[in-house]
Amino acid sequence: MIYTDTRDSKVQADFRTAVMSGMNAETGGLYIPVAFPKLEPSFINKNPEPSFRDIAFTMAKPYVEGEIPDDDLMEIIQDAYPFTPKVVPVDNTSYVLELFHGPTCAFKDFGARFMARVMSYFNRSENGTLHILVATSGDTGSAVGSAFHNVPGLDVTILYPEGKISEIQEKQLSTFTGNVRALKVKGTFDDCQKLVKTAFTDEELRKEFRLSSANSINISRLLPQSFYYMYSSLVVKNRAPLDSKIEKPSIITIVPSGNFGNLTSGLIAKEMGAPIRGFVAATNTNRTIPDWIATGDYTARASVETYANAMDVGAPSNYERIKAMYTLEQVRSMFASYWLDNDGIKDAINSCNTRTGYVIDPHGAIGWKAWDDIRGGAMDALVNGQKNDFTKPGLTPNAPEWANEIVQKNAVGIILETAHPAKFGSIVKDSIGREPAIPQRLQDVMALPDRAVPIENNYELFKDWLKANLSK
Ligand SMILES: *Cc1c(COP(=O)(O)O)cnc(C)c1O
Image 1 (cartoon, helix red, strand yellow):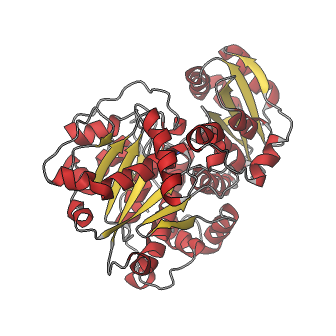
Image 2 (cartoon, rainbow, N blue to C red):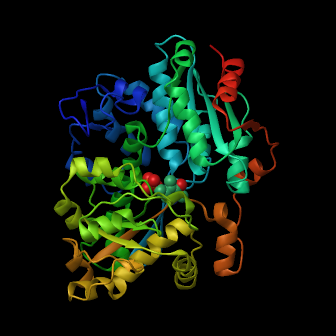
Image 3 (spheres, protein in one colour):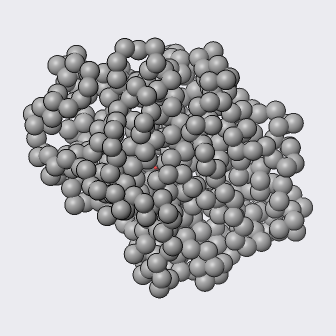
């Protein structure tokens, strides 16, 4: 596969270059495959559907062709995914896609674990350790730390702002041993990011160590997220006619979004033939994308803190990929968009629980409420010309191409549940009156000793620490 660049379509890179460099330093653009090959209809139409790992292998193959042989790719997939996503029906026309069965209980495990193994694979033919530096405001750091833990040839240094992340998040970052370590910085997330960025541009440091990043713009994190869209849409295509008594329901996928990496992966799956008719972009008060869809103006802004904090992004980095792949009109025909404020998020957790018995986390809850409002009359109203004010919570005034499928009650929804509710136990408790059960793997982490190294927000001290502690 050839990879090009969102800012310069003349760029041609191989998979290895796209993965190892993360972004194109010359243009500042993001790598993107030149094609999204369709899967064979005989594969997509299997009933029962293929296993998650078969789907993962079949989808990944064209993107690594000529660079990773089949046997090695299979090994990467098996090692990355000892767990699978789960499709849980919560009523006749709604499915929750649980993406939290990995080690850190959030969907980022799917992307980070694949990326870690691919980087390790390519690093085998290089000399010495590849050092990953990552700044995190919460969930990314734990997914990356866990994904790279004990992966040969790589090591990870995580920087996080002391006192600014939740207790569970801190435990998930600070308790690693071996090749993964955490520094707690006396500063903000932006300070952490600045330290990391300065290190990447420090010639002296780069001469001594091979440095890389592991952030969400890396194409090897986006591609594997498309696997679970394909998987869930095939599961739902096969079972929904029985559950819903609709002969051929259209499948709408509802995606709680921040940086829009997850949703971009859904677009990739659709391009490759996943039977997904449309998407709902669901966000919190950080409504940059819903505003863009409603008004046509894209205005990046500072982020605001919300209960769905993994989506507190005001300048979503994957907007650039979506814009490179589609026109605004195409986006408007595929997407409905929807947002909720904090009160709405709590109501949504409660309404999901009351209506279905399902305990959902604050991110997934926005998705649930978006779907429940859309099928419960909001889309009918929009089609009939009643436009919601886009600056108020709810369905943004854009009727996608599939709006009539909703009006005619010919659709089912797949809501992506991006994190386990126990990671946000106190908000869930405020909403439904009880704490969600904590999975064993989170309890285990909570019992481990904290190993984070405290550090001042000072570049020279950070650099000295790296020089004294990183292996060559
Ligand atoms: C990262 C994250 C999101 C947002 O995903 P994007 O790919 O940034 O849109 C949503 N929910 C949870 C729990 C997350 O950790």
